[in-house]
Length: 62
Image (cartoon, rainbow, N blue to C red):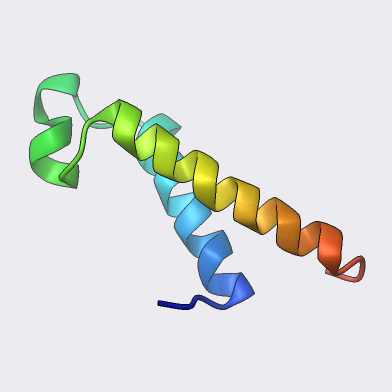
C-alpha cells in the first residue's frame, strides 16, 4: 500500500491525537477502541513519523 505525503501526515497526526490529545481514551478501553495497545500505536507512530521526516528531508520545499 502506498500513501501520498499528505496521507502520511494525516495518519501521523491522527495517531498522535489518539495518544496525546484531548481527554483521551482510558487505558482500560484503549485496545478495544483502537485495536492495539498504547505501545503498539506509539511504535507505529514512530515509524510513520520517521517516514514523514525522511520525505521532508528529501524535498526541501515541502
